[in-house]
Image (cartoon, rainbow over all chains, first blue to last red; front, side):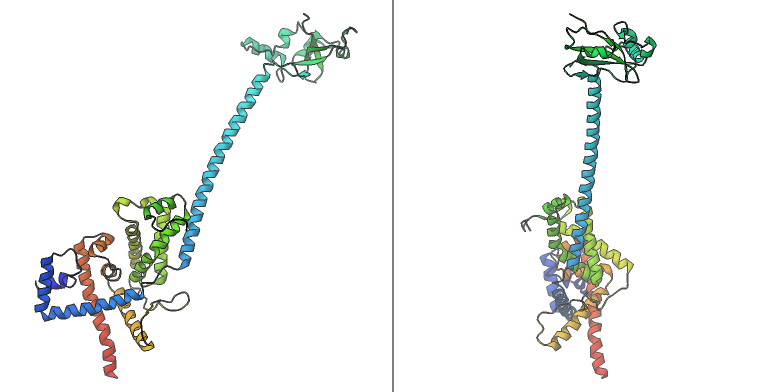
Length: 220
Length: 200
């Protein structure tokens, strides 16, 4: 081994695991025969001792506690923000779903309102907001609805006293359960015998809220 | 801490990525000292070392998926980030060598000499350690890195090469040149007091 080689690999030969045993032996042999390299090795060993003292002197060093504090704060902020954002997204979707559900239920109720089946209530509104003419158009379009229209059914209705047929243009049909005696208040004749009977009648109610015509139930 | 100490680093990292603060804290406590010492020995600056450690763990916190277990341990991954930050710092301040860093409490660089028998020995030894520290800090960055990793961190050549991302031969050559420069500087520093006393 030459001096240059010794300087490059021989100084640390005992520690360098990548060297072969033969190279280590050559380094040992060289340092025993070369005083210059032996002196160099001594200097390096002394320097290494000093480096060790520096390493020992700084071996207990660690980052100040404030670094950990800052990092934990940052960690909390980062993950809390992500969680909040995720919760907001979920809440948003939940609200949208709820809105759709409410819309669907409302629509379903509205549709069900167009098909009255339950007449047990004392007063049962069967149609509202649809004018007689509009209802007639609906029927012409084939809608199978009981919102039968004034024009179509006006023949079944009995105009109340003082009401003209033209007044029923925008009227709506209301199905009402009432005592027969109440027909008297509408100007219709009532038999005393069955004045106390409850009957189901259809009223044609104008825009002003006043009844225009009445349809009595079919007597069996 | 409710997490058992022998919990593996990658398990802790996975938990931390899911928002487990305790796992992150444990991971930090395991590795912060080594990162800090490496940064301090490379920069010679407490504040820079602190900032580098913070950056390293901030990166781990924000981009945990950057770590690939197939490429090495989390320690090596963290060293890699720290090394990049250190080199950036040294590029920004190429000639900054702090001989006497003050801590927050004004107590100097924090070098602790535990076994000095008398105050005079203590002072002499402390001065010598400061000289060595200055000599190491004056080495060019790549030689300094080799010296810090192999001599101060006591890594093997293979470990140092993996850390620096270069072949073992490169580490050996950097160490050789670093050593030569260091020996020259230390020799010079040894001679200065001798000459000064000879003049007196």
